[in-house]
Image (cartoon, helix red, strand yellow):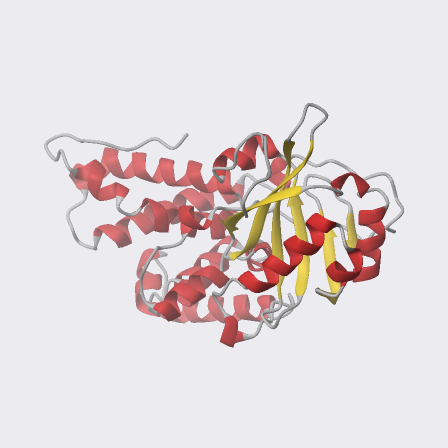
Length: 333
């Protein structure tokens, strides 16, 4: 549970001042670290360091800049001791749909994790900037960021997402503008190899109509209707398993084969990673429906679903997204 920093020395309102930045710092740390829990921990450590050092903060920079400097150092420390977070598609080739084995189960710190929009994105602001913010927490983008060295990662997020100037970024990182520009160029080149293209006209939007059509097909378990919504290179994956399946027909075969237990599921919409998302519940032998997975749908911005990611650790994800632990009756989506 997130703690709130309160009070310090002779400045009783410092805790409240620091808390004003929690959401945006969480978004920054999430992009840097790729894990929702890691981001929470990093922000809490940032708040504690700032709280303890506040009497030495002399206003030579803005409070926001100072906090980002601390958060960046916290993230660098964490990244130095951890393995790169991945997605199943980054660990090997796709599996055939009929395979019953879901593959190796890897620990949670190996996966790019989902995050609630409310935890990392502002509720209001400049529409263009908010659109960039939502795009930059999509699963594919966060996964691509994990392939950058930490300093390149920080430079790209600060410059491209948060719109800091090269001079501001250089000051935060104790480096030069030339070095910042060089790091940004290398980071852009790396991301350019990661197939992140989406229709920029639809940046930052969630296709509610597409989600409604998917949920209708999925709850009826109409594979013909569901396949019609998938792009030809669509993938299905289920962390913490390494299994992934590629292509609409293979996805349908998997859902009718090893995944047949999803028939009869019920779904509740949530907001995750700036994308279409929902909590999936399977029919329970005791009546009603029990949590099965948090599903994040990725799309190409022009009406096709490109990815179905089901996070199966419901004990972690359902409480984070405010999802109930049981559905006794038909839910209203």
